[in-house]
Image (cartoon, rainbow, N blue to C red; front, side):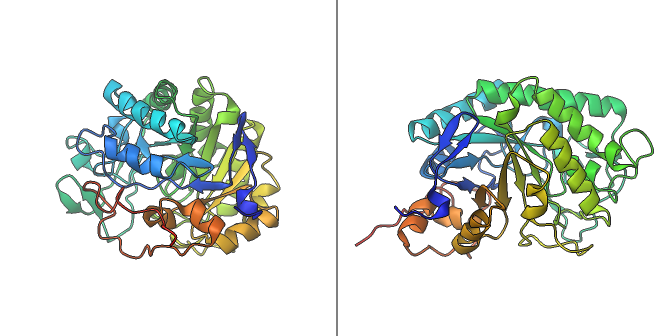
Amino acid sequence: MTDKHLFKPIEWAGNTLKNRMVLAPLTRGRAGESRVPISIMGDYYTQRASGGLLITEATGISSEANGWVGAPGIYTDEMVQGWKAINERVHKADGKIVLQMWHTGRASHSDFHNGELPLSASAIAINDDGGIHTPNGKKPFEVPRAMTKDDITRTVADYKQAAINAKEAGFDGIEVHAANGYLLNQFLDSRSNQRDDEYGGSVENRYRFLGEVLNAVLDVWPAEKVGVRLSPNGVFNDMGADDFRETFLYVAKQLNALKLGYLHVMDGLAFGFHERGEPMTLAEFRAVFDGLLIGNCGYDQATAEQRIADGDADMIAFGRPWITNPDLPARFANDYPLAPSDDMSRWYGGGAEGYSDYPAYKSE
């Protein structure tokens, strides 16, 4: 091993994490129609347990939250037991794992909901000609139904129950997914949120839903074991508004006041940039958030080392390189070559192939 910054231990939520590499949440669609986690998912996470912290793929908090074919859930007893089996294996391999809790909102389709329209802050469709993959094939995005106050109350309760289920499943913590144009991000963004009630308009109002979700899950989990993911620069799922910097600095200050354990920021531009000003940096978030700060999106070993050395991040999340290199920490630590990650043809859906069948490096 080396004395590189990525391999210095760090404290999180009463745990000493063995390094500062975070497995980014990567939706891979292996849970099938039942959305119950299966054994090859356990293989996948256990193979990557050498990371300091593993964040699961985005996981639906309810059937209403679904919007991705084959993605897992956390809202039935069978799902809880499926995740429990995975977590036991990860812990046996000396890993730490948190559940990313997900509601897709308008980034869904009525095909997932027995013909009912997906929900969002406002009745504004995603403007993306690429469409969405549904159980019945690829289709255009639909105009969602704007959530009523009763819808919001019910969804907050769904987040709380998912947090309860995550604890039952043996996770080490939870991450609330408020990024990448999914439901909570749709409320934060002033283009997708055109409401005229207490959940729209001002940045304080647009934050309200996320704040209620956090208050609910903090009834279940201690703040130090709760994280939030944000994507201030992201254009994915038609995000980006002119007031993005004001919005996300306000959100980060609110999260800091709650003393959350970490803030996971997609500061990199690998998913595209909305170009509504200069990209936000980790340094801007460091100035207003006192907990662990995780950078993400497009990092390689050198840029990750630099962010930590500069003091702008405590940990860095890696995605695509970790798909084809299950032993990524060992490869970084020992300067082993990386397996390429440019062939995505087997990444989404299916079985072990292209998922849990990538080998660790073997030195000669």
